[in-house]
Image (cartoon, rainbow, N blue to C red; front, side, top):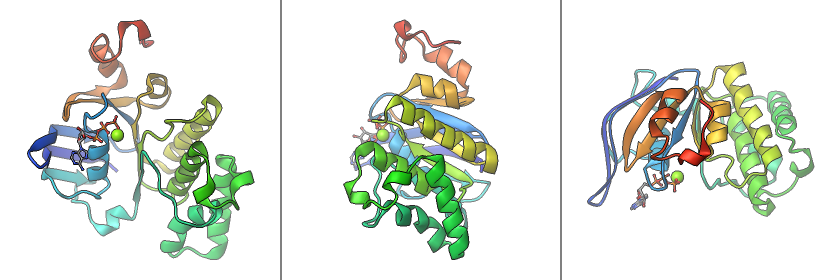
Length: 234
Ligand SMILES: Nc1ncnc2c1ncn2[C@@H]1O[C@H](COP(=O)(O)OP(=O)(O)OP(=O)(O)O)[C@@H](O)[C@H]1O
Ligand SMILES: [Mg+2]
């Protein structure tokens, strides 16, 4: 799915938290969203997911306004994921169940993502008892199980150990490549950005300061956002 935004303004009371003249996210790619704390990344993700309609301007996904049919094909993994009060298996099965899939299809798809994200040992554990990292892995599994056309990820690997981070990055790449899923990935991890994203958007104080090829965005913000000492490989 491709995304186009024009003249988006989002305010909380009198404070403007988003002020985006123009933003384009290209279909089928993994686009990184970066920027300092409080620059509006999570606010933008909630608007893209259709969870916040309290803004002015236009948002088009595949040339249409967000509607129930489009919403069925997209999902947002929150910075702080929320799972329902049942075991991991049934949390992952849930998106397929509400889309009316058959029992056998549900079982085979759930097993596939359990394997992909190595959740075998916790699949029968209640979601409320998971560690922070396990919760994020389970939330990722639940998001990719129905093969969304648009996958919105808000810092999906914050608090994740290095090996599990690679496992999750592989799962994101897998869904992007096998289902042509468009992925929007908010991250503070420059290495992750370089491993995952061809395109990037840099936000500061609610504005899109730079968007385009990752290479160009990184070279533009080097020394201002990314310290010179980090020396991203360009
Ligand atoms: N419900 C709210 N009421 C008032 N202000 C809010 C509300 N939600 C968010 N904000 C403000 O909007 C701004 C953008 O917040 P947002 O969560 O989008 O930032 P972010 O870029 O995701 O930051 P981080 O990197 O810390 O996750 C912040 O200044 C925040 O304090
Ligand atoms: Mg955020």
